[in-house]
Length: 412
Image (cartoon, rainbow, N blue to C red; front, side, top):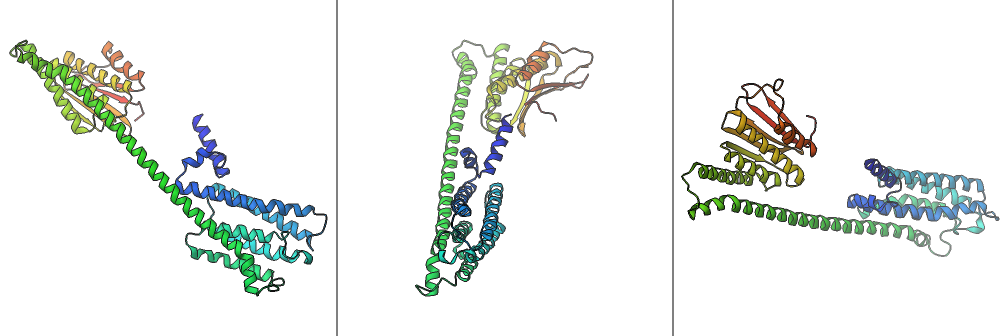
């Protein structure tokens, strides 16, 4: 349901260029955000001249020699701008072909509407084709990458000069009066050109600052996690290796006894596991748990070869605990049932799936004849299922046992 709601918001944001959903705009890249914002401003500008122009259809006094032509061209302008809005909402910006069509449409409006105006109205505001020229000027400025592209305004300005040839040059020289009349269109292009460039530069800078802040925060979090892992290592070393050495140095333990030798072997295995873990990457909750599992197994008389690679540091704590305890139970079964003193423990993360395996080369068993005991059914399979993972036992008589723990449980 959440995914469907997000898809609906995305579609709504695209249809409206994002103005109804600020979160949609915020999720877009900086350049896309700026283009959508500028596109909204340009479409609102067009609406500002289309609506008053539509009112001219209801004027009590004739404003045009051919009202029908005005109505048709106004309808064409409305249809084109609606089409343009939908086109831009879908793409997020103006395609070059859309700009070309808009220039051609403005040239048509300049000729068609100007020639249909009543003579006494001259170039007054009823001639909405001049406002269409302003909108086209703003559009050309917004889409231009370099000032040279303002040359796209030459065709509509030339058409304007032809359409208004009869009323240009009476008060001022022809070219001077033409420059005065098209001044606003040219400046609209210049203004939108600099607005877009400025907003894009600022948006890019803000995105860069946000990325730097996130990177700094991630680094601080990683440092805190590493510090917590080091503290956990120190506590475990204090409770195991240092406690054993201190007791021996003070004469509290006789290093020649079998029990003390087994305890020293367990402590040494734990230290080796920590070294192996550090070589594989940052310390993790799962790595610490597996190191303790190796130490306990050595205490039971096993020789465990342990290797870990690319373990995630953001593994949920309950998952890390479940996998470490299930691996501990698997090693306990090796010590109790395999008849071998060697075992292998590996841990690796590939494509988001964490896999922990324990392997021995002992006597194995026939899974069709031997019912899983409590250790397999509850301590391994049940424990992994509770956290969304799985446990699989692969064995055959005389072939040893492989226990594979996987999280999350995904089909292979």
